[in-house]
Length: 65
Image (cartoon, rainbow, N blue to C red; front, side, top):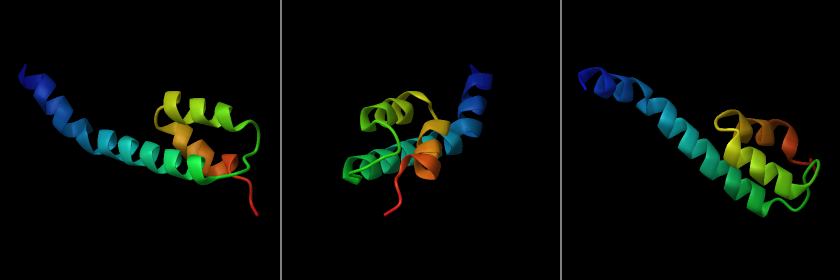
């Protein structure tokens, strides 16, 4: 039990970072009118690809104006 608590303490910053990235990506996804590829596919990537999904959306998913 003690080891599990230590592991949670170590992973807490990553969990928080993933949560913030996902929320930010969802807000930007919602406000973005055009994406590279289908918009619903990017939603699935953001939600189910964990840490890399939101990062991929920010790097290649948004269409430049």
